[in-house]
Image 1 (cartoon, rainbow, N blue to C red):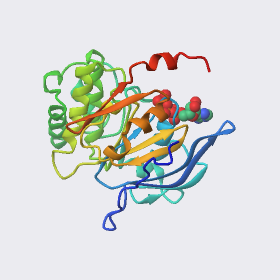
Image 2: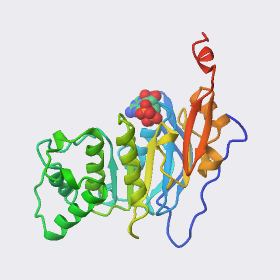
Image 3: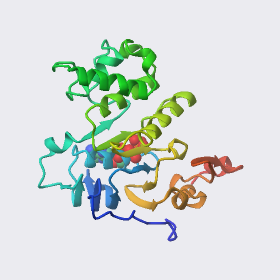
Image 4: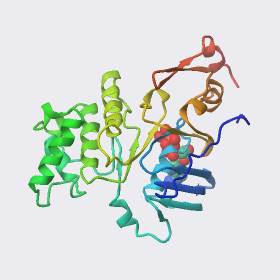
Length: 286
Ligand SMILES: Nc1ncnc2c1ncn2[C@@H]1O[C@H](COP(=O)(O)OP(=O)(O)OP(=O)(O)O)[C@@H](O)[C@H]1O
């Protein structure tokens, strides 16, 4: 990796502990390190992105942060609580992980509204007592993510983009302090992708109760302008981290993605353009 790759951790605010603080975090599985020596600090209330190609360790890092995978090495604190001395069950009450296809799929016959309501109880089905306050919060959140017109549509009939926005509304109903979005735009067409990105951006424009958001993605096109810090992973290690304008550089990302590309910036968004003639080198035998 380029020795000039930026490695700027965001400044820590002593008044509020960082949402995530990793020091030398590593994960060893099946005879190799799938995450290596990760130092990373995420300020509370920020929107950050984890970027990297397939197999670079993004999901592993997400699993570690959400307490579903235990690090082999290093120190990790999430929401001010240090792993090893915290009750993970209690910590998970304050964080939410949203994935297009998660382990716990919603009841497909439940309506979008009912799926959003289940977020209040952290269950797949709707078993708890639904109060008026929970109902009105679910309605407000579904409207915020642009799903007012499909309130009563069964989840199974929602489009892929509508489903992920419904899951974001579901995740937000308990006002999590940390929201992990693992490739929320995976498999979406352009409009659906932009609607999800607009949803994430809107979390940062509305209200003071916004959570810290960690967005995991392969593509720099999928970073909303709210992203203030980017962690780039390559083969389980930190390739670079810092402000988007410092990290989303053509040379750095060409090296990480093993593909000559040019990064174009426009109005807070970033786009990659594969360099003309790159295909010749991509098909060259090694
Ligand atoms: N439990 C595990 N045991 C062994 N190897 C694993 C385990 N989980 C992940 N890996 C390996 O670790 C590497 C990183 O995987 P991970 O899923 O974190 O990458 P990723 O960046 O999320 O990839 P993608 O973008 O394709 O989802 C891969 O080579 C994967 O095969």
